[in-house]
Image 1 (cartoon, rainbow, N blue to C red):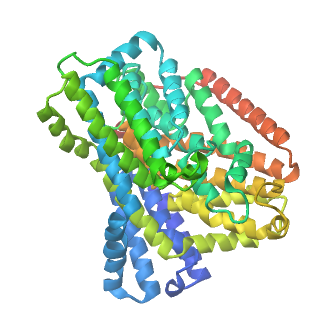
Image 2: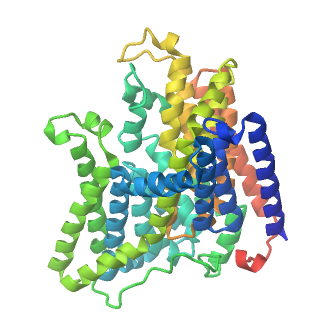
Image 3: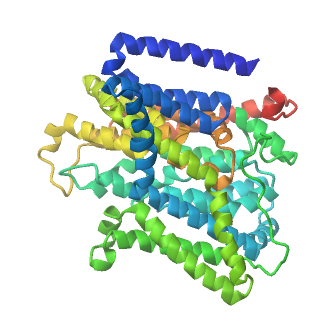
Length: 550
C-alpha cells in the first residue's frame, strides 16, 4: 500500500512539473529551461520508488533524449544519436571515464587476489580479536576513511574492500557500511588541502590563490564537518532512524542485506589458511603509495614541479589508473614470492575481479550518459540564471547558494560540475570586492563564505544523489544494493543539511567563523541528543525486509 501511494505521488509530481515546464517554455525551447532538469528528476524518482537502478537510469536517459530531440528538431534519428552516440559511446570513449573504469577493474582484481591469498580472512580474524564491538567496527571504518583523503573514488573502494570482513563479523549491515564509507569520502576530501578535490576547486577560481582560498573555506564547510560529527555519533551511540534502522535490526539477526534481491553475495573466503594480515595490509599500502605517486606523476612532480602544485595540476583519473596498474604488478609478484598463490590463480583473478565490478560499471555508464544529456540541455545555465536573480538578497546569499548547489548536484550527480558552475558566478558577483585582491591574500570573508556554501551544497547533493559517482562507488565498496544505500543514507544527509542551512543563514548575518561553526556544532549536538532520546524511548517493532513489506 505504501509503495502504491509513493508511486501515485511521484506520477502526480511529474505531471505538475511537466505542466510548469510547458508554462515556462514549449518543449521546442527546452534547452536552458525547466525541461533540462526533467530527465534526472525522472531517473532519481523512479530509482527511489522502484528500488531498481538500471531501468530507472535508462528511462531517465530516454526522457532526456526525447526532450533534446524535440528541442533540436532532430526527430527519432536525433534521439538515437543523443542517447547512443553522444551519450553511451562518447562517455565510454572519454579518457577520464576510462581511467576510472580501469581503476575499478584493477581494484576488483586486487581484492580478489587478497581474498584468494587469505589476507582478508586473516585480517578479519585479527580484527575479531582486537575490535570487540559493532561500534568499534564502525569507528575503525571511519578512521580508515579519514586517513585515505587523497581521492574519494580511491577512498570508497579501498575502505570497503578492507573493512567488509570486519563489519560483516560484527553484523553491521551493508547499508550502514556504505553510509560510513560515503560519509568519509567526499566530506573528507573536500576539507583536505592535499587531495584531488582541492585541485578541482582551486582550478575554478581566477586571479586569486586557489589553494589559499580552498584552505579558508574549510572551517565554513559546514556540511562536511557536521557530517563527520554525525558519523562519529551514529557509530558510537548505535542509534539509527529511518530505513537504516530496519537494515541494522535485520543485520543484528544475521541478515546483512535486508533486500532479498542482493546484487552482491557475501565475500568468498579461501579454503586454506596460509594468508597473514600482512597479505592485506601490504597490498593496500602499496596501492595507496602507487596511486599517490601516479597522481603526482600526472601533475609533473617528477619534472621539477612543487608537491602542492603537482597535486593541484594532477589528472586524478589517469593517475589512479596508472598507480593501480603499477600496484597490481607489484602485488602479483609479492604473492608469487610468498607462495600463497600460483601464477594460474593470479591470472584467474583477472576475470573474477572484472565480474565483481560489472554492476558499478553499468551504473556509472548510465549515470555519465544521463549527465551528458542533462548538460546538452544546459541545466547548469538554467540554474546559474536562478542564482544570479537571487543575488540581490546578499544576507541570504550563502543559504541560497547552499540550496541551489544541493539541488543542482543532486539532479546532475556531479559535485565537481556543480561548483565548477557556481564558483565563477560567485566571483562575478563579488568582482568589485576581488578587483584589488592580490593572488597572495586578502580575500573578503563574504566571498569565502559563499564559495564554502557552494562546496558544501555540492557535496551534500552528491552525497544524496543516486546518479553520483561517489555514491555509486560507496555502494560498490560496501557491495551493497545501490538503491538501499541511497534510501538509507538520505534521512541522515538531510538532517545534516538542515543544520547546515541554518548555519549559512547565520553566516550571512555574522561573518565570524568561530560564531558560525560553534553555533552549528552546538545545534548539531542538540539534534543528535534529541535523536538519541527518541531512539531510546521508541518502542521496538519486529524487523522486516523490504520485500516482506510489499
